Image 1 (spheres, rainbow, N blue to C red):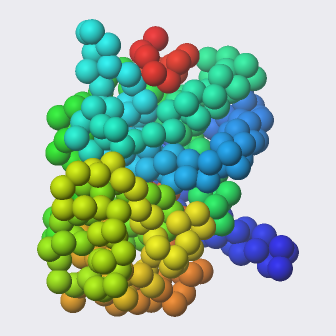
Image 2: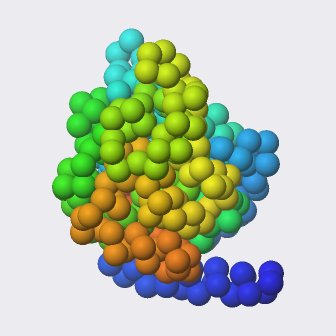
Image 3: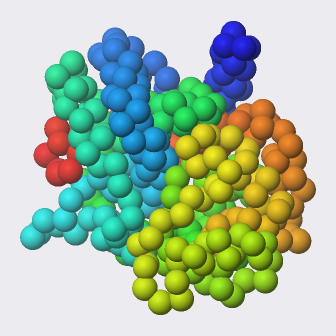
Length: 319
């Protein structure tokens, strides 16, 4: 079985790498081959420690990468702390008291700096950590094009406007992803990241009390820990079947109207993505292949390369 899984991952990696020719020519998988040859091992080992300590961190880091890329590109801007003279993205409404895992990135950055001083960007570390977390929870691998540099700026306003809302309808979701150069198929595949992780009560309260396209037993279960008033930060698994295993259960949940977020269930609600959701629900390998390719494309959203930006010494502050 291990050999079969390894072969599948190799195939997926090769399939994902076929997309590299379409990404920014300055991004390449071998970018740090000479300057930091142990980079990927350092990142993977640190992520393995983190996920073993708290499996949820695999989902948290994946979400961090998504929220970084959707705001002015994959530039590490989400990692910047606010200061008296600088406003970052951490306190944007979609991020405030929600995005997490910054300490994991700090740990990885410290280890990478010790091995390859002033060489690897925080943006690239985040991209590699997102892949490692996915793999460690049972998901696919992919080739990560590297060579991103770190932003010296951030945008609170863009974070508030460009990140997809958990309350969005299908049309809004398609537009949001299209604005970043991602197709509806990419959107549906990337939404499968909700096969892992947790969501706060306030993000799904309207669905479990107001939506009609919801399994009544599922709604009752979620209402037990998410009351009409209060309990905003109470947590529930995005995937009721296997919140700590990366697989296609998320799509099976949608087919049975057990999507946690309104935006999740919009992917299977009589619209254009229904057939793809059904396909993913019975074909995990296809989902893995599409997810890997979509992650490569998302990772290429407006990267800073060449002499643009900087290589931060500390991911939380500009040099």
